[in-house]
Amino acid sequence: KAGVTQTPRYLIKTRGQQVTLSCSPISGHRSVSWYQQTPGQGLQFLFEYFSETQRNKGNFPGRFSGRQFSNSRSEMNVSTLELGDSALYLCASKVQGMNTEAFFGQGTRLTVV
Amino acid sequence: SQELEQSPQSLIVQEGKNLTINCTSSKTLYGLYWYKQKYGEGLIFLMMLQKGGEEKSHEKITAKLDEKKQQSSLHITASQPSHAGIYLCGADQSQGAQKLVFGQGTRLTINP
Image (tube, rainbow over all chains, first blue to last red):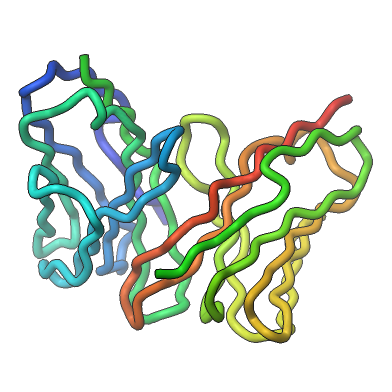
């Protein structure tokens, strides 16, 4: 069974640009969450999608958005990039329900210059 | 909101020694996850604990959730170089949904 797949693995963008990251969950998993990891703030929750609907959102500005498709694949978009958006972006997938195992992808390393 | 505090923040042990990492929550834990991360990579799922007093083991790693469900410990027996990495505890904040809050991580170094 394939794991959570994130593409691309590495990305370099310029300030002011926008970026789209992709996440393919484990087959059968309908919940996809996104996290940002930085040395200063650690791992922080961005948002969670289930059945193409955003169910939870973290404390991030509106420049961060996402969506989920009918096949459960998810994308997150960051517009008007800032230097502080440089981070490892991780997505996780799980089956429905609280206290079920959540599996993470390898992440996308975004560098904003 | 719930906060998770991990201790120690970093740990250096001799290969073959045992070690323990702790995760303390500001609120009752309803689901506690342990992950391992190699620098710059994704999180590897280790274990999930749900019930007070629950204990799970995988190879040489054992995790426990205390009876009061506000603290968890991760114990590694006879450590090996492959155990090196960052260990993170996470707790589910949202009923039925996935909104994990994480501790700051414990960086483990194994000296040969």
